[in-house]
Image (tube, rainbow, N blue to C red; front, side, top):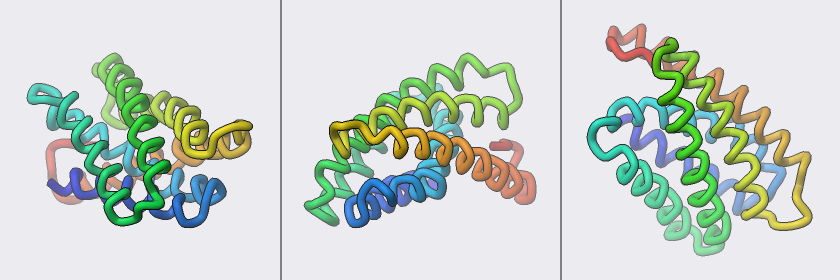
Length: 169
């Protein structure tokens, strides 16, 4: 339940911040919130891999976007772009994470984060901010997500090891 709440709070916060402050805020949210979201997604993948992974992740992503819109009607376009970008990134993440299954958890998480960060960083700004494409924002988001996700994976790994939980992020 902890990871579900963390995932939703990340999506919701990022969507509302970007709605309020625009494209430049998306780089900060990419580092702090989306990097966290992509990392937490892999723990949910492990928890749900044999029990409805696809529909549960779709429902979770849709819930985050719907809550964004409910809390701020102006967030509608950002929430929709977020939903579509996270759905596309989630597919890429799932496939990559699966194929890295024989590697260490940290390598699987960060390897899949690189791929899903690339997808999300291409899809979200294009849908949220339109054309002409904001290439600097897209590239900065990608770097921020990869770096933020890497730091979050280390922090969550440390937390898991400290708590004695056998599942290391």
